[in-house]
Length: 265
Ligand code: FES
Image (cartoon, rainbow, N blue to C red; front, side, top):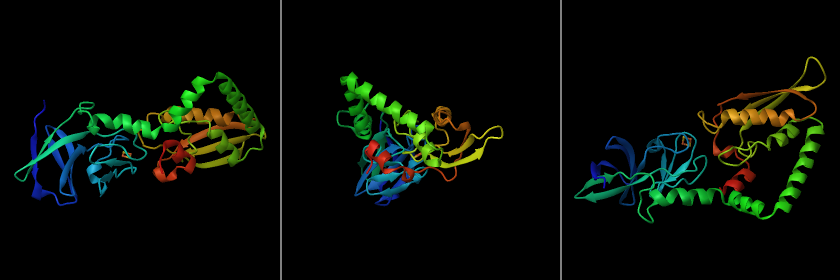
């Protein structure tokens, strides 16, 4: 079993307060709240943000990069854009000295958030999707009906008078592959503009789209899917998708529908 490492004295960290400490080569965020100490990885599971630099409110730390919140007692991800917990570690205090013992992912004892966190978090973040999938599997007839309805709706969109609203409706068909929420409800589309194609009366569509993080691995797929979705409209000649990172995406950009789908209130 890993050993406890001395990291600080209790008087080093105010209550409430936080500090970055090194434990066996790992950077750990150490918190002091209500006379207790807590330790979690100093890594936001969304895109590696330094959690210890974030704002501490009660038992919640907010990532300074895009605002994901984590419970410092358990490491559980409490809000988008993080969906996975960060690791929580063991802490003990003896004679005014603080010791931390590192845990490995999935090594927590029963009830320890280091292991319970991921399942609890994912289940709470995706309640709707899980239910939907079960219902789809349970009824092929309903599936066929829904698919027919969707096709009819898409057909009417692709022949409707082209406008920004129509483009945004078409883009609702494009879903983030990790979150299963469409890019409109995620708030990824900043701007849609049109210009007439030089050779005919069709329209070139230019879309400014952002990502939930600069290193979002789904970026190329989302761009390709967005182009494909808008290109289905009969009056579209070409689609350009530009990635813009200013202003940076924050969860505030999500629609109420997107929040509902992720169980965020
Ligand atoms: S890196 Fe932490 S919320 Fe994006």
